[in-house]
Length: 202
Image 1 (cartoon, one colour):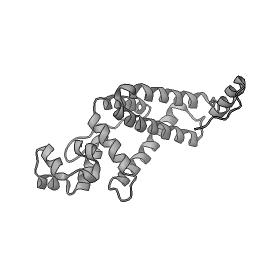
Image 2 (cartoon, one colour):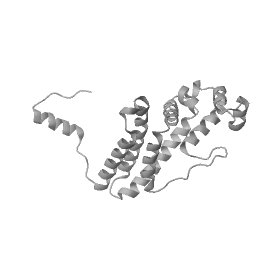
Image 3 (cartoon, rainbow, N blue to C red):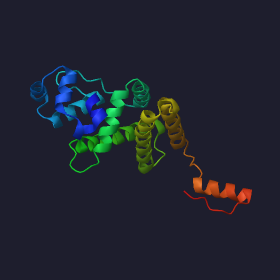
């Protein structure tokens, strides 16, 4: 895992993986079949799935899944190597022909659907399906994006606190049914109150 995290998939050598695992190159191939097979096994292990005889973690369902996500974010602050591996490989997977592309596409599709279902259970029938799906996408984006920021500057980024804050805001907004003010209207009103007619630029 540390090899893929430090060098990415294309530059990560099976020989180096074997050395770090205390195995031979042939032994790695015997267990995983190929470099691609090893990559998928690494990713499945990261997600807690059973891999080559190693028992997976029990799956959490229902509203408790939100607490489970927050616990995972907290756990990740003590697993820099795992977080780095995921960040590097997920970014690489958008490139053409990457062997982990289907894995990450499927993982995100499944996580988005599961998270949307859990959010629906928590907030009730009020919000539209699109609003719930968008909320799930936003939470995933926050978690993945914060990982990159944390890897680059861990002292400046509170991953568990920030994810909890965003999750609380999203759930509260959907459950209450009160839409947030449009930020562009808010800024326009602020500028108008100040008598500043200038248009903000990016």
